[in-house]
Amino acid sequence: STSCLKAVYIRAMVDYCPLQDASIPCPDAGMAFRRGDLLEVVDQSDESWWQARKLPWAASCAGLIPSASRLKSKQREQWWSQPSHVHTCIRACERQSCTSCSPTLGSLSSPYEEVRLYQRLPQEKQRLIVLTGASGVGVNELRKRLIKLNPLAFQGPVPHTTRPIRAGQLMEREYHFVTKELFDYMMSNHRFVEYGEFKGHLYGTSVDAIDDVLRRGQICIVDVEPHNIQMLRTPRLKPYVIFIKPPSPERLRETRRDARIISSYSASRAFTEDDFVQLEEASQLMEAKYRHFFDRVLVNEDLHNSCMELFSFIQEAQQEP
Ligand code: 5GP
Image 1 (cartoon, rainbow, N blue to C red):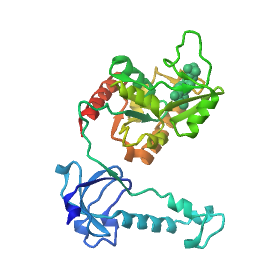
Image 2 (cartoon, rainbow, N blue to C red):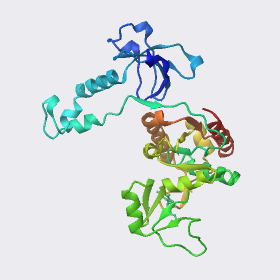
Image 3 (tube, rainbow, N blue to C red):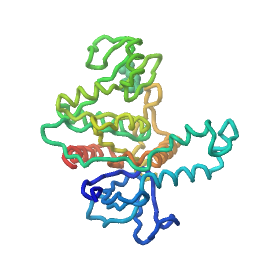
Image 4 (cartoon, protein in one colour):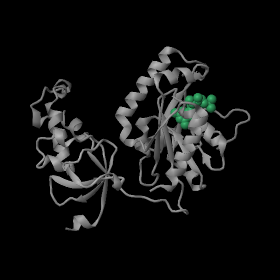
């Protein structure tokens, strides 16, 4: 059939285990996958069951996976079987006809995301590198070190701010200094991939500032919180997402003994036991919730080695399909 001729690649957004699926016609032929796995769908001719291979190809032969519509209806069944939605529904609804529940149900994420096999040509723009991780793990420090290591190759986007320019600062170098009206306008036109407020002034990173770096032929490196990753995942930017993770509890405490953490008011102070616990918990939560967006995971044991490792991850990201 024609569906066999054109390869379709998807990224799984959910976990699937054929052994836990009583409806699968042939359990032995089923293929398990995890959220974030890349699959090549080799046959989509059946409405309910597709045949797919896991990437890289050498790792598996083709197996049976549920089609997107089948997985979606399974998700829906599971959602309805959870009692929690009944309590959150303001109408204490009759299941299928509730308008209060429907928007929530509609927001159930798609089980698969279609992806393309992409190889950057030498004349094309470099790929955007997105670093993310829990506060205190060293994401910003790694980004700064990398840029310092080779400012011709790596750059961060120039952020926008509504705060006044300070003596010695240059327009468009430290920041794009803009009015509150322009900032609001950009915000309502979804020009920022992230923004925030600090001491009464607005700060944000725009898509255009990222594009400026890429247009100059440099590798743009941004660090964002994971909930902002989705904004960056566009076919144009093709971000490569690296999650920075803390090392084992012992190594974390050992390596950060003399390190300083930036508190919310920019003053630095020594790490406390509470900071370590918070960092570990936040990191675990992030990984559980967003791991399907991460192309690589880097354990930041010590900044020097992690910076070197990051350097090679980024080179691979520019070359690998
Ligand atoms: P300053 O005004 O002293 O240059 O920066 C103050 C603070 O603004 C920084 O510590 C940082 O937390 C925040 N900031 C700077 N750039 C950005 C940005 O692009 N986005 C967000 N959300 N905050 C920023």
